[in-house]
Image 1 (cartoon, one colour):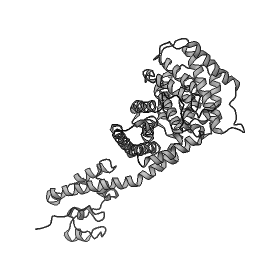
Image 2: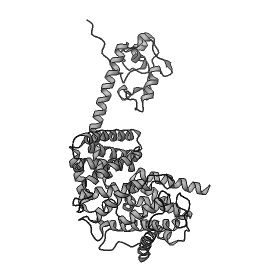
Image 3: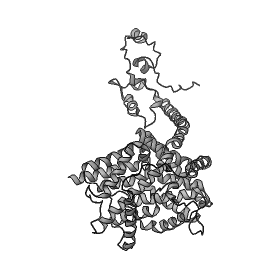
Image 4: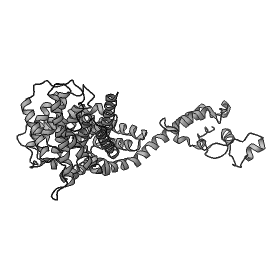
Length: 486
């Protein structure tokens, strides 16, 4: 029995005429010996025609359209007749072979890429999602724990890959990297679902909680999963409630402290949203958890006189963080005026007095660090926003973004001084706790010069972090500026 013809790949050399006839070409230029002896037209390929079809079989290949066109015509000529083509059986075998090769290529690519992506997470991405001046037990301890748990927790492994790959997409603007990031994200969700349905105690599983944390960070700082943040936050809140809330003592593990702060920060991020979005997330569903978690942190054994200096995520006094959130929600008109206004006014005045104590941004003292300067000045920006929001809250203006204020008001001048202090400091621009106050102050400034300061600050933050959060803020702010000029 005659063995069926073996499917062969297109040769990468020789004239097109010999390739179509499936004969060996001696590659003599300008007319090969085979074509010359038979008096055939000897046509030679362009550079793009020499692409191996193994690289064309995947539908996402940048050469995919080219191979489809090549099946129709070559250099403007009609495709060969049926008797010149491989049989349908041969074509099916070739397609199967291409599919197998594509799968093998993807696996080989994953084997090469994943260690590189993990290295990007360790060397670059991780330092952008945790505050640089926090306690070393937070900074180095959590990273070591992530790397340890990745080996046994596939959901965490794929969450790490999703975050790092999404960040690489932002840096290189490679569409394939974005698709790969979403693939890793889907795998993380799948593995997470398997863990949740298995009979276990999720509140004791650090790998599970870390995976969830990275998934909502992916939604905040990455691309394509922003709408998933609330469900991941709710899952993290449930685990923390089972693990920590209601216990008489405070937190006694560094990871638990970090996890609580991370959830509070991302509640803040979701509840504040974009200023032009008058609907936004409902803070009411988070209020009870926020107060219990804040109380838990206050009772923590890690609390110091300057707790913000050891903070891994929030970096500013949590009470100030909460006050900014409440006033922002009130500005959206999503909270009724049932708050204790006298108490809020007292808090606002207290933060204003702190700002007046130091009218000029301080230089780093000998017994301080530059990171402590970052947190102190970021706290000043939050206090400035609280002061401005409070004054716009009193006349009960319509819901919407903050209104412009005079460029001469002391709050704006103080904020501009802070930004100019750090205009050449990349560490400050990489510090994510400054993203929201910088963006928000852009709605208050009124002069062209001050807007340029804010614009330059936001652009530096994007250039140095490539976080989708910053990109959303820039787009929202520029849209509002354009609307106010029209």
